Length: 473
Image 1 (cartoon, rainbow, N blue to C red):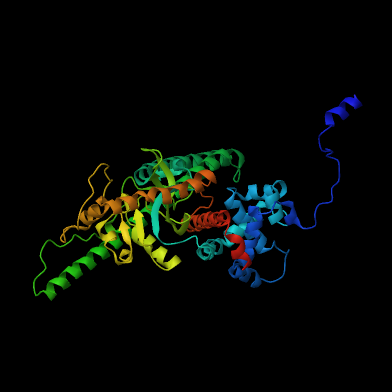
Image 2: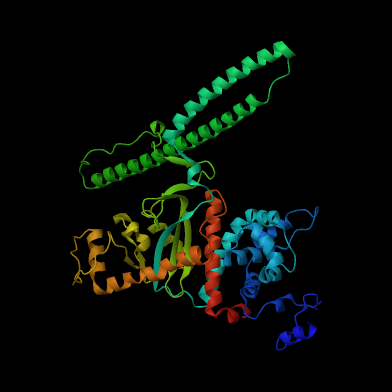
């Protein structure tokens, strides 16, 4: 038998799991050259983490020493890069995954420490977006020739089945009020019987628990109703202010012409009388998320936020990333244009977006005046003869845009839009599996999406092969 084993082993390297190996003293030697984790170590060493360090410098020295901020940042950044953002998965990976283990310096922060660090420094982590974007610019990955804008629904950390409409809230509130009233009456009856039989201070446990559950549900429904009513009043107040401003502007223009303003005066709503739409919904798990149409599955809805990105054509680097609570993209074009200028200094030569972004007001806005804007007013038709010459000077913004997109150069540029921006969502949500946000609340979800965009750009920089000289310069 021993001879047989020797013959079977011939031609193979020795294999003995009981052998004790002396591991290299430099943990980075555990990974092959050019590994993503080593790149993350180099990048984090270059980033300005002063905002995070300042938090700890302001604290006293009492208590147990914490984990090094640079290590925690490296772990979180790497985790989002490889699609493992869960704090429990990160904790487990510091034991099981060599990349995580090297980044952690063979330390093993527990998931509570990881989650607390992310929550405490979420704004600072989101702020790394601009620092990484500057590294991409220095590496030549951003040319500002063509930027494409697009949006998608990214699921919130909340179930759509935990939402309720304003109309249903009213029905449920009345039903629960009646149930609570009956339970209170029953509790009083039981108390009276038990007091008579056993003396005061003795009562059963079933009714109070049942009453507590219903009172808790009633309180949550009332809070949600009040929030929807407050939002309706705020929306009406904003609409009223806008209409009053428009009326004042119309009267001012008429006065300058020496005429009286014509046409009916706009009906300004009274904010105090505003009530929510019957179908207006609020989620009990994450009230700041919204029910939105699922673009990938027609006719279905998801509990989500609307994720907006602007992507440069050179290397699919995200130059602007935002999260909104609006289910559509109609009002996002101008804010995204401003974000592009703020982040990279100017608009691209060409900026494109799909028909969902079009409005006459948006495409005529001064924020988009410095770019060749391509936003169709409606779905483009195939097989249309290219337009010739210039549009009529009296043409509306929609007519001018149709003419531009009907020209051969305009159509050729707009056709590039899909290949620039849409693959980025696939790389984030499909390749990395980041289909759902972990953090609840709009501010936290917005910051987490910026962190996701940051790690997308880091991966583009890593795979470009231009990072070594940049980080060693």
